[in-house]
Amino acid sequence: MRRHRTPWFTYPLAVFFAAFFLIPVIYAVMSAFKPVAELRLIVPTFFPRSLTLDNFRSAWNAVPHFPTVLFNTFLVAVSSTALAVTINTMSGYALAKFRFKGDTLILMIILATIMLPLEVIMVPIFRVLRFFGMYNSLWALIIPPAATPAGIFLMRQFLLTIPNDLIESARIDGASEWKIFYKIIVPNAKPAIATIAIFSFMWRWNDYIWPLIAISSPRKYTLQLAIATFQGQYQTDWSSLLATSAISMIPMLIIFLIFQRQFVQGTVETGMKG
Amino acid sequence: MTDSPPVKQRRRDSYKYYILKQKIVPYMFLLPNLLIFGLFIITPAIIGIYFSFTLFRGLGDTPVFNGLDNYRTLFGDQGFRDAMRNTIFLVAATLPIVFFSSLMLALLLAQPLRAKAFWRATYYWPVMISFIVVGLIWQWILRDSRGLLNGLVVTLGFERLQTLLNPRFAWWSVVFVFTWSRAGYYMIMFLAALLSVPVSLYEAAEIDGANRLQRFLYVTYPVLKPARTMVFILAAMEIFKIYPLVVSFTAGGPFRATVFTVQYIYETAFQYRQVGLASAMSVIMILFVMVFSGVNMYLAKRGGEV
Image (cartoon, rainbow over all chains, first blue to last red; front, side, top):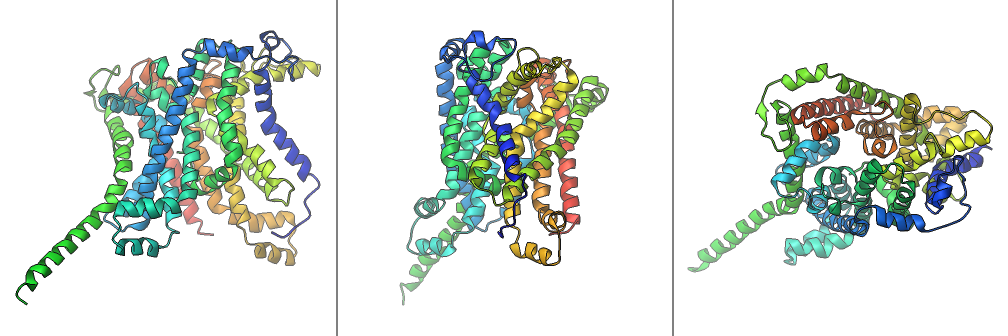
């Protein structure tokens, strides 16, 4: 782009917005390290006067089954992501590289499900999960959410750019369709796979609605459901709440710092939440 | 010559078999995804429509067909009407704010700035935080007693504010917090569109003597059209189904000032066990979302491709 002179207020504005988006989070995270007495001050301190890990200890004890909940969240996020990557790549491949009866219809249906918010079909989903014996099981958090329309669409768009010759010559060499898929498609689709993987991990890690519908016993809770439930019951236990929130943000922060580029790219390409 | 027909026959058979197999292959690749969509999205959607025409109390109960009764009840349900109106107002208030904040952020980042990646990352970061935690963080800051906001107000020597205990303040806080949480996301969409504007367009405009504002109005803004439509529809849908953010932020209070449709449907189904009624509410809500998106897409199309 040609370099115009930037107006004088550009940098002050940039700094202002950085503060606007960062300070609330920094303040909340710092609060998680303040002693309980400091959290109860009528006029709160911004920077901690003294630091402590007590809140993390009390969260560990106060939130029911904390280690299990943490483990559940990891298990769900990782396995659902693995499943999502596999089946979305498969579907994206079928929709990008095959002509078959109903191909446009299927694509339309998949895109239409984006318009159907999960929140409004909570009740019947609950019934369906019970019917399949998946109610109150982590499977309900792993399998159904793995089919993300956004993921399929992203993969399809990406695979359209792979030359057909690659596939055709493998077919002439007598490679089986499955072999073509994992020897040629998968290695070529790595950037799209990475994008789907990190988005899927974020969605599952931060998800509240699926666990809310599908899980009833606290041992099967995920972190977000545990935080929301705990807050509903012990509104005032801010030390535990802040510590748990800080813990729930750590994996996201790490992933974000590593995969920042993919997030930006993925937002542009999918333009939607899964 | 005599044994040639069988060979031909076999070859044709295997070719037929190959063609058949090739026809099945794409469906096999699609199968797992379609199975999940069919079972967990489409089936529930259809069942939900059926439920909306039934008397169905309690989730272990059997639904009994009762025609349009639920829809009749629903129009007399003050709580639902309030929640629906509240939601529509929320969309009307939040949508322009989110839209212009994210557009402004994108315009800022489209400038030739130093450390662009840093600014972009800081503005995007709240998107990575779950709505539950976003709600908690802001409740921690805005709550009435001992919150950071009131601490600041008192330190500066003013009278303390009535914050989340005040319905009006709480309602506008939802608008604000949603914007804080999602502006970075929509910013990226605008930014991608901005960076794809051909430089030659700006140069031509400059030669014609267009100033900065004119360049924005007559070059940038029209080119942004697809991005604008997308942000408009996606953001509206997100605000329509707002719930997790509110759960940990205001929990619908004070005095139910921040109860929106999804929360009302959830309470009707899972707390009051009026499943049929809740399903009718869902149908109404889906119709709203569909009409809204449909109208917007139509208007975008009618305006012509850019």
